[in-house]
Image (cartoon, rainbow, N blue to C red; front, top):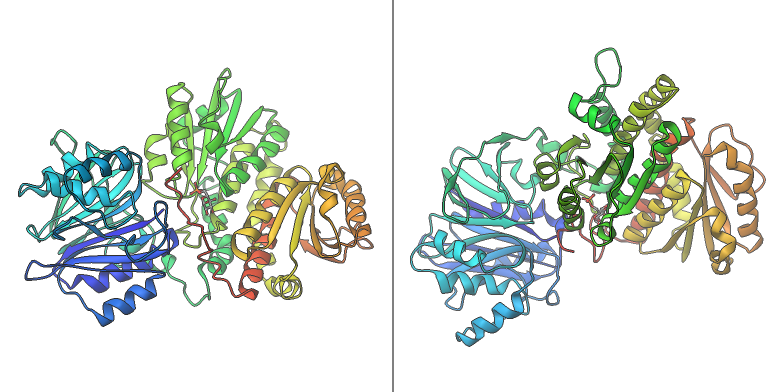
Length: 600
Ligand code: G6P
């Protein structure tokens, strides 16, 4: 979940590294640091606790020079956020520096071994062992030293290494943590993700697990652990810089919420032919239509997309769907069903638990289909088949447009499998991007509501069926960025416990988009109101069932009730966003969270 960057070229590297780190700050922001080799072959390290702005100030006060360097922004796992625990880490003589994203699981054993070899450690991190091991194996050949080092590491890593003695080289390696190489005419860059590369190049190469690359300013050579050179194609990224910038919005999260009509439109377009018919690549269509059982998995928000999909697919296609959180599925005994396929959902395609689950399922021989937003991510490379969402880069930690485009992709699968009404479902899907825009045109209504309600100490979301799944997602969004205690309940379960928590300080948001269950929901709203709660209802236009029960009603455009999640969640996203801003939080970088969870 940390971010790493590197640059080797003809220009001064420090500002390039700082700019690149700025675009990776969503991956961690406990501390930051850079290491640059000067023209006089001196390693200069600047690192400091706190946000990147602290590092920028430090570099202003104590500048570094040189055109080869590495950088890091940290999400702390081993050792508290502090100057000493910040990366880059160096060997004892401070001539080799390393940045690391991941977890070295055998670090205690390696630390004890290195201590026996008279190495004094300065930090509490697992990463520091890497710098000392490289030094131990270094004999004038940095590639060889890195190769010998990674043979001794258990766990996950993306690392970038520089060495005073070899100032024209940057060596990188990875296993189970992302790393992308950017190719320019007169420079080579690396980063944990694509956005930092976009202002320099759209030409990239991906490193696979257990590969090492040696970078110079105009060349890249990739090797496996046996030292054999591997040829790797250069790919072109389709995103532009604008997509990775705030473009006048106060926060990435608001920009990404507002981009949903376009993201939904782009995702749907990829599934339609010129006549507007649903078209899937033949191999994916065969895989999906041949399945008698669907298993869907993911973590966090992606898991909520899986939950929504299970209700929708079972109702329209009568195919049994099992939904399990990836961090559970990877450890539980999974009984393989007849003609079962698994759909794995992940915005980043790098979530450690989702990838471990994918490998477990493949070992059981279950065909896998990934739904992801990032071209070339680990999930896309390892799954049997892949469907991309077209959301563009999602920078804010809390997922918004990635979620709704995941839903849309899953809804197209439901429409593909639909036993009846396929054209009505497709028409409803085609209307969603425009309806999302109509909703966003009224964002001030939600801003006003948040301005009145943001200091509520308890917020409960409730709903039934897909509204329950969206209640879970809404509560997650609110707790992630506003730090408000929020929970979600299946509305029918309220009386089995949660209602004991309801009092006059509680806001209850009732999602009511399932016409057959309006009266049941109305009774639940009455129950919480009778205990003093304030009730906000989210329902469709022209529904009047709740007029005399709710304190406030927010109406979303009318769509097929199974597709309401794409619209109702936009209300919750905006509510969470405005509550966060009202409380003075940074919604893009919520405390303790990182966007890409590449550790378990
Ligand atoms: C983190 C993020 C969430 C995201 C989850 C899964 O917890 O903060 O927004 O839903 O990871 O990420 P993925 O990239 O696999 O969708």
